[in-house]
Image (cartoon, rainbow, N blue to C red; front, side, top):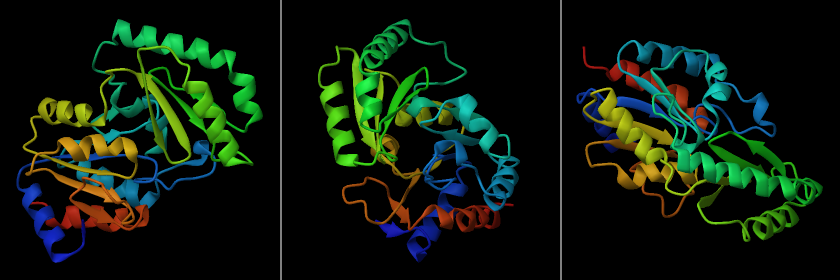
Length: 251
């Protein structure tokens, strides 16, 4: 991967903007910094203002692991689309009965192990269409990880688990992921391409399916194996990226 602000990256930015793209972004670690307590996460005024400007030109989408209702008030502007729970929560799609049943089963199972998980410092977050087992605040993160691994090893069928930054996520097997969500939003918005920026394991679902004419960006250069085309060093570079998008917009 090359840095997005390289000459090659800026040419790629200019090229994708001529295709009238969907502008899609992850939230935590991308538009907002990773914080110890998820309730404290907010988009900065500088980023929010630029996103609001871009939203008057092209549809802006937030594709996040959070619930839609959780992330919406943290943005400071109104995007065209918000998809939550790693792609599984799309307000414009009817929920799947099979996926709801799988999550109900997961909820019941996790409830029977809640005491052990909480004793290990794991915080359980139920998002409806997904669940998250956070261990960022655990005193002994290795012990917390072992407790999570032991718990989910005996879960029933119909569920998919994947990691993240100090979190293990549970979703229904075959539930839409972020790649499915961005593809769906490109079609829904009748966009000619997508520009997507993300920072975590679940964002690789977009990077892996992106056609050559899309532009994909990973936050963090130390991510061997990522399928993103370009990288930024940290979310702190997002305001500059958004300003570049504003400046490079075709007139």
